[in-house]
Length: 74
View 1 (cartoon, rainbow, N blue to C red):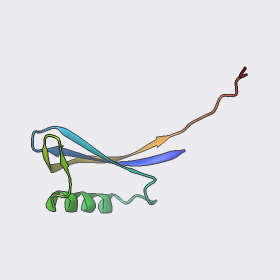
View 2 (view 1 turned 30 degrees about the horizontal axis):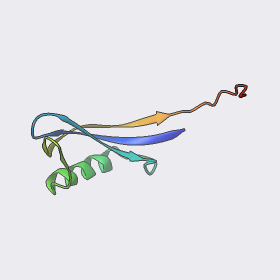
View 3 (view 1 turned 30 degrees about the vertical axis):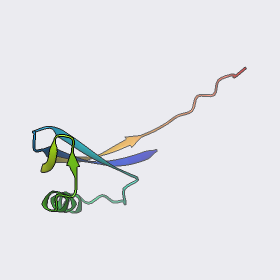
View 4 (view 1 turned 120 degrees about the vertical axis):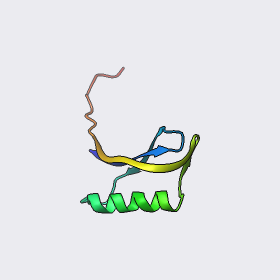
């Protein structure tokens, strides 16, 4: 199972911007994630096609499980 931390922002045009971080350090601490997002915004560290990132919208952990199905292959 793989995990991905997604940071959700809003840009200057009001659009959504998602920044993904594969295999985040666990446990993921909400206050640390929020503080890191504040630093990204304050330092204008990221931009998007529709302008700078200006606001936090949220954050989430996305888990993905892959199950291989054995089939006969010719």
